[in-house]
Image 1: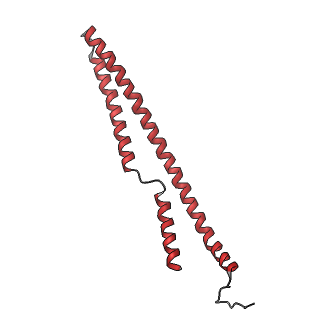
Image 2 (image 1 turned 45 degrees about the vertical axis):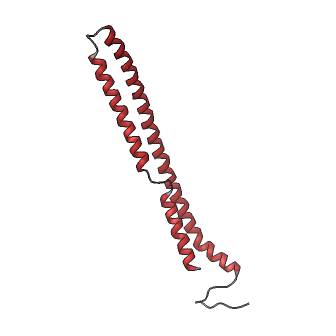
Image 3 (image 1 turned 90 degrees about the vertical axis):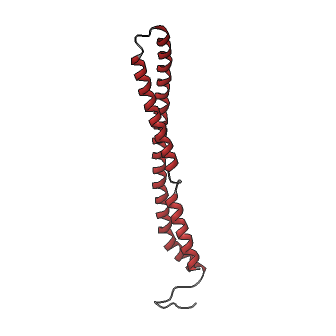
Length: 131
C-alpha cells in the first residue's frame, strides 16, 4: 500500500467515489432544492392562470346571458334596455381584461425549471473542464 502524505490525495476507485460523493452530495442537494422551489413557483403560476381563466369564462357567460336578455328586451320593450347594455359591457370588459392577462402571462412565462437547467448546464461544463 502506498502511503499518502498530507498534500496528496488517496488514489484508487474507492477514493475517487469518496471524493465524488463528498463534493457531489451537497451540489446535488442544492440542485434538488432549486428544482423544488421552481416546482412550487410553477404550481402557483398555473393556479393563477386557472383562476383567471375561470373568471374570464364566468364573466363571458354573464355577458352572453346579458346580451340575450338585452336582445329580448330590445324587441319587446324599448324603454328599459339601458341597464342591461351597461351590464353587458361591464361583464364583457372584465372577460376581455382577464383573457388579455392570461395571454400575456402565458406568452411571457419563462420555461419551466429554467434556473435548474441553467445550473445543471454550468455543473456539466465545470465537470467537463476538470476532466
